[in-house]
Each structure stands twice: as C-alpha cells, then as structure tokens.
Length: 283
Ligand SMILES: Cc1ncc(COP(=O)(O)O)c(C=O)c1O
View 1 (tube, rainbow, N blue to C red):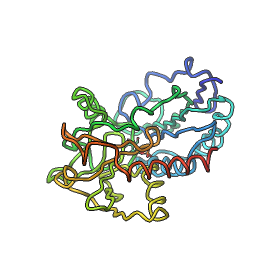
View 2: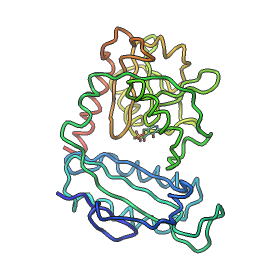
View 3: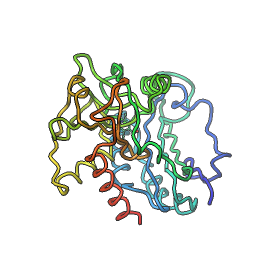
C-alpha cells in the first residue's frame, strides 16, 4: 500500500511529488479539481466525476486535449497504490508560465492526481450528527464550476470550526439556502425532502445526484427546490452530503436543535441506502 502521485504522466510517491512555483494554480487558482472516494480499492462513481471534471475544465476554457491520458491512468494509479479506504484527488491547471493574467500561449495544462488514504473509521463520528452554522454566501455566480478558487469556502468552514460547528451552510441575499462550504444541503420540511436545484448557485454534487436517484426507489417524496433560511430553521431534519463525508445528519443549526435534536429517521434511511449503493459498486 503506497500513496502515489501522477503528474503529467510521471508516477512518484506522493510525499516526493512537487510542481513548479510558476504554476497558474498557485498564482491565480486558475484550475479545476475533483475528489473521488475509493472504497475497498475501487473508485465510487469515477465516470461521473470525470464527466464533471470535463464540464468544469471546458467552463474555464482549459485545453482538454491531453485529458484522456489522465482518465486512462486513473484506474491504474488507484490499483498500483493498493490503498483500500482512500480518495483520488485530481487537479488541472492552466500550466506553468511567467505570471500574467492573460492565458499563456502554447502552454499545456498541469495535470495532477494522487491517491491518499483515509484513516480507519474516517467520518464515523460525523454520522452521529453534527452542528452547523449559517453564513452569507459571498461566492461568485459560477459555483457550478468545481474550481480550485475556494477562499470564501475556506473562510466559511473556518468560521464554522471556530463556532464549534462542522460545516457552514450558505444563504444568498434574501435568504435562499444554497449549499455548504464543501457539501450539498438537504432539508425535510412537512415530510418532503428539499435540495437546491442544479444552477450556477451550487456545485451539483455527485453524492447529491446519487441521493436523488435513490429517493424514488425508497418512495420518499422530494423536490429539487430551494428552501429559505426560515424554512431551514423550521426543518424536521437536515443533512449534508459530499463524496468524502457521504451523508452527515445535522442535529443543530446556529446553536438550536434541528427537529428533536437527534439524527432523523429519513437521514438514517437515506444513509443506509447510500451505503448499499456503495457496496453494490465497490463491494
Ligand atoms: C461547494 C461544494 N458543494 C458540494 C460538494 C459535494 O460534491 P460531491 O458530492 O460531488 O463530493 C462539494 C464537494 O467538494 C463542494 O465543494
């Protein structure tokens, strides 16, 4: 078992991997990324993540000509690393060039990916429910692009940590709840599960998509419709989702209990069904 990195086709140990100082990811955050959970040595929904990577790269006008090389190498890197419980991180930037805002001519993108292990029992504590805070959504209007420009997300997550919370949930002016700093948000209001529709205001999560595929089979009513901050505060249940964290129940919001302050029945059921979907795919 070895944490491995792949940089523009060259494989090395993750700890020994490096990229040049003049990479545009470092200067400008001029790039896009993906983070894919590996279970039992197998990536979950790799194809969906690669498709989203292509959409993000196209949205920032990144040259995609060499992307098939990375796509072809990803399964091999996961296999070679032999890490059972891990994640695959992929990042594409506009390459290495003297610092200038203009796109550099004739420069190939930097393509990076690596496999990093997750500690045993990763995320289990979060399954017992977490606290969240709400914060104004001060991000740009193209949140559907999975860019490495994450400063507002980073600041929001740190604010949550300093408040003793796990995640910060964003709301736009007027009180429309969008998503978490690194998660999508689901709220149960009047027995119906709500999540923000796909739009430029959220990153449409792969986990969110898997959940929406599972709900009809479970006979659970849902709407891809935004809720207001007021509705969120009155929700019977809230949960947040991401590839690494999976489905995390929210039991307190801004210091007040959500519902009865315990993990809700729907969160528990959806989590079980998600785990079953993972098991079907990865064993
Ligand atoms: C802002 C944001 N929303 C949602 C998600 C969840 O996406 P996924 O389920 O694809 O991990 C992430 C994950 O990084 C994120 O950064």
